Length: 276
Ligand SMILES: O=C(O)c1cc(=O)[nH]c(=O)n1[C@@H]1O[C@H](COP(=O)(O)O)[C@@H](O)[C@H]1O
Image (cartoon, rainbow, N blue to C red; front, side):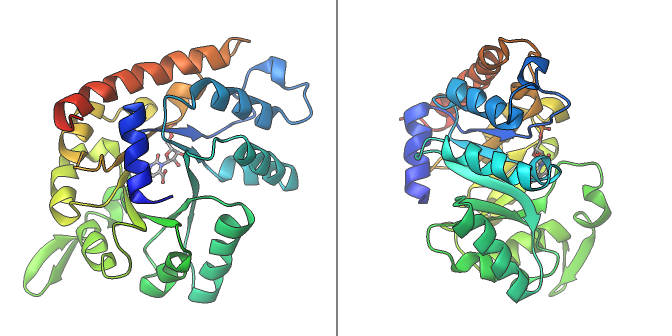
C-alpha cells in the first residue's frame, strides 16, 4: 500500500486508528474456547465489527507464535479476512545480519503478505535495508518506544559533530538515508508525546506508528496535536482497550463501541488539524 492510499483511507474514514490484534487465549470470551480455532474466530468477529472505523490492524506476532504451528494458521486465517484496503502490520520487531533479515522479510512480506513489519534498528544499516528491498512494503523502525525501559538506551546522549543528541534522534536522522517516507515509518510511544514535536522536526513527512494509548495511558490529544502532518502521518494503535472490552457474547459489539469512541475523537482532531 502506498503513502497516498493510506492517506486517502484516513480521509475517507476520518480515522488513523490501528487496532492491535494482541489476541490472548487467556483473555478471550470463554464461549469461543470450544471452537476449533478460537483466536481466529475472535479476530474475525473483531475485524467484522471494526473495519470501517480503523485504517490498520496490527497482530502482535508473539500472541500467535506462542501457540506453535496452530498459531501461524490462526494468523494466516486472520490476514485472509482483513479487507484488502486496510494496512496490515506484522509486529514482530525483527532485525538481524543481512541474509537473515532477508529471510524474515520473505516470511512476513511474501509468505504472509503483510504490508509492513516492525524492525529494531540496533544492529544498524545492513540489518534494516534487506526489508526495504520489497516493493510496496514498509519498515516500521523502533525509535522511542512506549515502555518504561525506553530510557535505558533510547534517551542516552550521543555526541555527533560536536552536538549532543538522544540515541532515538540519531536513529531517525541516520535511517532516513536508508529508506524514504514512502517505505519507512517510525515507532514513537504515545507515553512520550512530549517528544513528538521534536520527532516531527526530524521527520516531517514520515508516518509514525504510535502505540501506548488506552491501556498504557498515552494521551491521544497531545499525540494528534504534534503528530498529525499534511498526509495524516499517524497510525495510533490501541489493542487491549478495544479488543477486551467484554468477556461476553457481545464482545465484538463492545469492541466496536470502544473503537467508535476513539474514531470520533480522531475525527475531531482531523477536523481541527487536517480539515478536508
Ligand atoms: O511496536 C509496537 O507496536 C510497540 C512499540 C512500543 O513502543 N510499545 C508498544 O506497546 N508496542 C506494541 O503495541 C501494542 C500495545 O498494546 P496495548 O497497550 O494493549 O494497546 C503491543 O502489541 C506492543 O507490543
